[in-house]
Picture 1 (cartoon, rainbow, N blue to C red):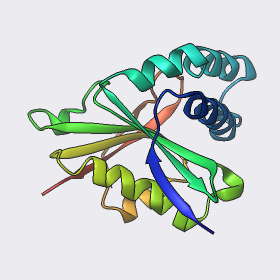
Picture 2: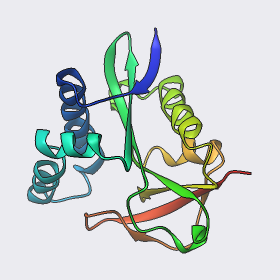
Picture 3: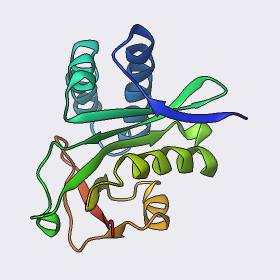
Picture 4: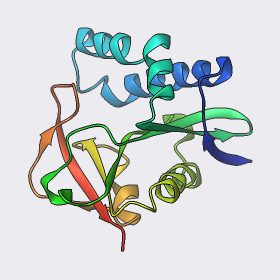
Length: 171
């Protein structure tokens, strides 16, 4: 099994891979947590071709895709957008805003490849934060990589979901 995680750009191939991954992973991640109409609206609004091209071309974002034997299996979006947590005020901070690997391929080495690439990209920042829905299957991985769950809960992005904030301070 050949695993590689790399940046993606707004090419036809890159957009096609991200459209498939973002929709698949949103369905996997949120089907049990949202009403079908809420999930459909979220996918249509955030993961259409026009929005993805705009987000990929934004200087605020970096998109990573993990491939297994040349097949896209997961992705992460690293961004400077979003409300910074109080805990990182005054620090150079960045956010891993989206992180996911298709369930049928969610093997430790694949998830590790993706998070390790995120950490490498973010290594020049003083702090990294992740806002993840409560009960996410990725929280154990984040904690293994040095992220610490912060007290309390918050809202998950544009969705009516309770989430937890994970923070990693780079020394």
